[in-house]
Image (cartoon, rainbow, N blue to C red; front, side, top):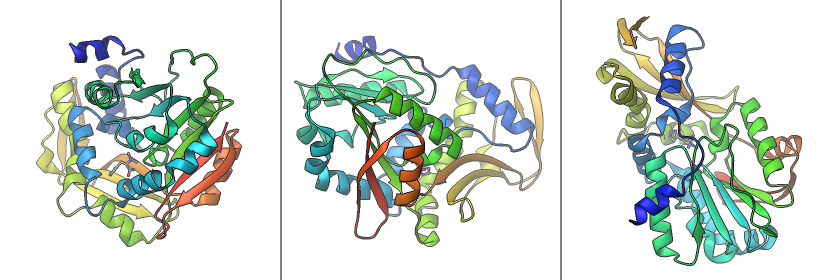
Length: 319
Ligand code: AVI
């Protein structure tokens, strides 16, 4: 009954299977052979991502969590308590838990593309915080999204952790931040951004020894097999992740191990051996670079918190 209750509160629009099909066909048909990383996140992909966050090599999650826990008081001092808190790409809503005691929001609106995962997370959060008004919104927060009206008198505070901003192209990041600045006017955005660092540390984080990141990348094809009726043989692809220093980003690709023919909804495509499908960019930032981007989008940068190793940063941006 509780799950039903949560589902009834869902608003927004879930991703349509046909959009995935169209984007996959485009990526297979012509250069730049790239597809949006948003397609990683079906239920299985979200589960794999949660496992990535626990990996010893994947420093961003634990570093950001430590920053949020350590600075929750200082964050509440700039963001204010009693806000209408909106999280973009909330996933399992685990990081917000570190902020709730200090921030004490009047309402929490987690937005995520993976509906089932979001519903489970919202149900768990309600159970832990019976007094908290949780209103999940299923949808693609990169698209124009209709949010419930702000609560009267409450400022809107956005939360965008995890350096998911780094999975956008620079143009998309600017566009997203511009939209967020409009949405959050009078409040602000708490933003997590991964920092430029030793490429070896980055390489290890995206090529973990247990192969979870590889499975996460390959899940894009597994998802197509489940949802679009394709017959990709996952053994014929390998996971490639490397740091592109000129672009300050990790790139992930699925590389064809051999010459092969694949089909999506009756259209066939030939993949040469070594041909890559570009599945993700993960941009890395400097504090100053991130602040410049925020100013361009209409924010006024406030404090930024980093760890002693300068691995990760959390920014308060006044909207
Ligand atoms: C969600 N996002 C910030 C992750 C990242 O690090 O770019 C996704 C990820 N891809 C591979 N590992 C984790």
